[in-house]
Length: 149
Image 1: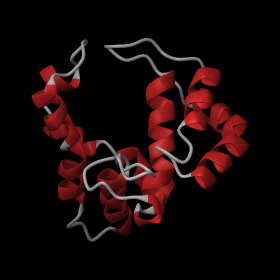
Image 2: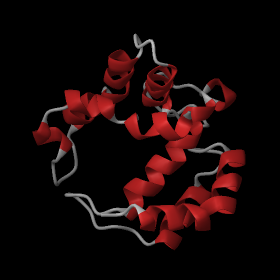
Image 3: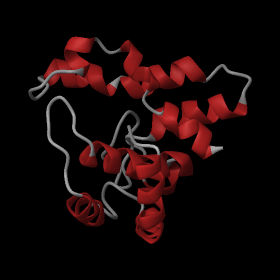
Image 4: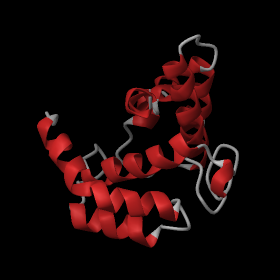
């Protein structure tokens, strides 16, 4: 179900004003506090669904910014306390964010993104998920190319 649920991880951004969401510069403290609420907004949107896919999407929305070392948000969960789907989606989300152009930044190279993910193994990311990510990266890149705009 993760393949169907994970694409909804940022649905809570619908509750973030465009002037914050699309800001080209660095967010100020209050803007950053608002942006971080998208995880909870997404969970609130999806949690009451009768669909198991949407319930899992809600779990992912809530957990995808938690960090392996406990320094993430919204709950500061650590290690295995973070739902597996959230740990997987966290890597996919960061990889995508780094390697795609955004209004406020240029895309990173694949190698630079993978290097950062390696550096963050055990801190931001679950080391076992990082290992699997690296094992399947070539396949992921083929799929990504197939479905790119």
